[in-house]
View 1 (cartoon, rainbow, N blue to C red):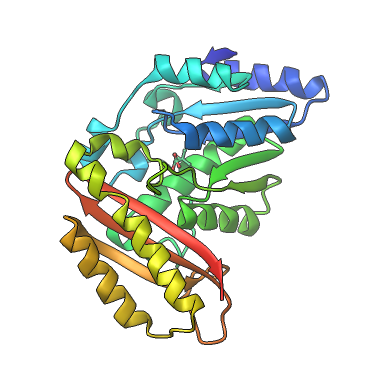
View 2 (cartoon, rainbow, N blue to C red):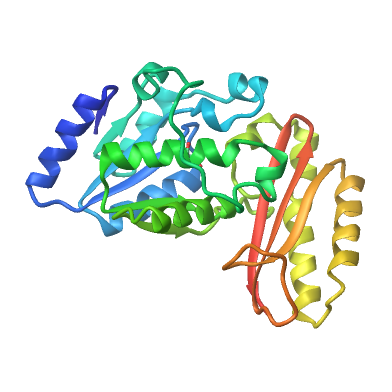
Length: 282
Ligand code: PAF
């Protein structure tokens, strides 16, 4: 695996692969890789001939300075993992390479409406930062396909919408959430949890499963279910953020006739903000 830090080197390496007729797959990340990221790599490896990954902790998508500063940076370990899982090229730029005119005056891309709901409401500007960096990375790598985790369900939706609205020639692939045996979704932010908090963290997924079971058994009492799930989370030591039951194709609140649903949830535990979701049919 080759690591490059400049746009010139990145473009030269991708162009060489393209000239050799290779299909280019892309896995953008912010590093601190865990099995969830590596599953994205495995998928990209399966369906493309040349796998590019990026590691860039994108300041534009953090609405909290402390969160940005303490975000784990583990480049050497990440390089070893990417290499072991078949990555061909890693782009690991410094901020000045990505935002040469300064992050404050950077041109941005914003997907309206769905960027302002759920995680977008709790973290204003977050999805504008995500769509801007993903757009920029797509322009740099020009991949045939790009792979994202379904754990960030709303992010995946925003990216698909951006690609669709702007007619970008990139196929977007979503890969299932990787979970610990306890059910806890793998996340770089799990590293902020104490031993006690780690023991409580699986409650989030357990509550989503509980709500799904009730809905599949015929319950339509969504508001009551959400109140009870939030109470159970608080009893386990969480601070509530949101839980919504939505149509998984539109991300609008689930209507009576909707059968393809997803429950989206976020909650704070200690210093971590955990998000999770559960897709199901009723
Ligand atoms: O999901 C992430 O790690 C980030 O939001 C992404 C897509 C790499 C953009 O910075």
